[in-house]
Length: 459
Image (cartoon, rainbow, N blue to C red; front, side, top):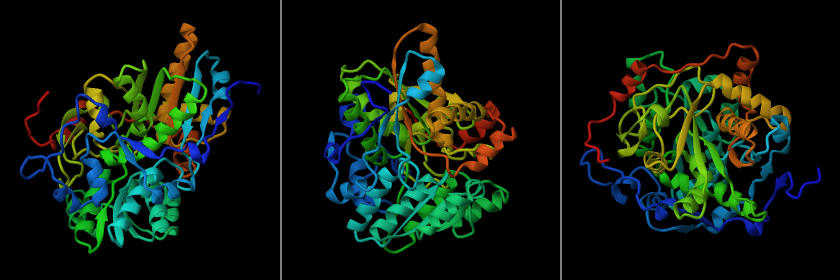
């Protein structure tokens, strides 16, 4: 194919970013501070270090340092699978007959199959630096649990993973891979923690939620010697680590003088979306880029489009700091028929602030239409996309077709945050036409909203 721009744009190791980018440093209006649930005062490092590793806590609370160096020990980990390719979707463009240029940053070129490894590595590295011997975490669709298991194996740490019960049943091969790396996987809610037992007493047939799994993982961490909890999304230090995605994408586009007009990412807790858009959003806030940013979430878990902007807990047991975010309430339980990840009740505070202030758009999509887009993409681009990433594909296709309608030649960039190799149960349901859509009613959402604490909100 004789095109000036290659199908795959690769960076050399020398071109890999040596710093993460802290978007908050360039935001005039910062995200609201995390609050201690007991005092309602801003949390301190000491508060958070009882649960998290020291350096991630420092990064979490840093609103001013623009560029944060990536230690050589983490760069060494990254070099095992990075840089990841930026791909020009020529075949999709042809299939859609659109004048738009479509690019996607592909994060599925590692054994975990997703972007999650970008933060799993740093968090395991910092745990090792702190002299810890084990970690606990949660996982929904299994991508974060797999990535964390890989990272702990690399740095020589033990790991316990609480996996949302319905996901552990739907994705047995994710469970097998996590265990192959040496991690202990427990379906959540479980009888291994006080939190899990309490949830099961209330609802023995619950399918679980990320909020439940987070609660169990935190409880285990605080009761285990030389152990801390690690989180795969939502918090700002996770988003920081994921900026490696956007930074690499920007370097690749800059090599060819390309400026994106529309940047799209799927949104669950916000790590993939935030990682992709941060360097470009920084340019927009500085008046150097005129682009639209679109977050795409499942209609069954609509934190952005139907959630409330409020202080809320990050977990069901209400043990985390209070986070000002777009939320459905920590008591929200997503529908069991939802095939992918993106099940979390809330959204990263930085992204929530950007959305609240009008810098970020959001759309909610039904899963059958998302899988329609995934299959269309797969047939022409040759990659089986994860259900999560397919939300971004759906809107990228919509925007490309709008360009076809108007004749505008826009540059569209989206994040392909992972592959769907472990999601064949969902693809089987799609193929067999047994997949259904669920959109919660206002009454359904009210159950989750009732769990949001009554804290005065400013703005």
